[in-house]
Length: 148
Image: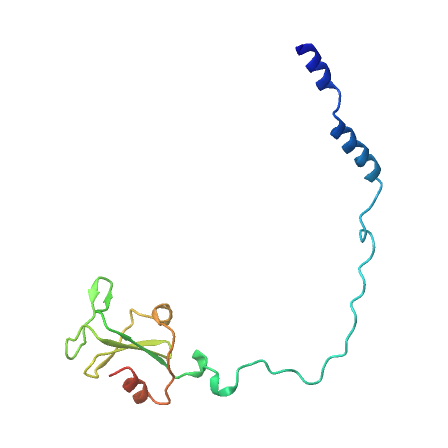
């Protein structure tokens, strides 16, 4: 009995024979489009009027190089190098307004005292700055907007 099964397994099955015949017929055939040079794209004349797909001027937000500076509120205490930053004049240590202008970072306390913070840079400001919700024509307008 096992001898018959082994003998039958040595011969190729019907499916294997059909696959071999199909392979032999397709061996010399080439798929369409292979070996044919690609067609030249049609040349169109450039249009003289370009569509303006940019936002209208009243909806455009100025880029950072068009602004004199940016500011963000910082309600929690600011800790730099393991030390809590305090105002040099009134010792306030929270509720800062952080200003970034001309590659310098300035801290402004609630009372209005300002001090430059050299341990912070513009890269730090950019990492922590959220989306801008408004632009202001003057510094005082920005302070009013942020409640200072």
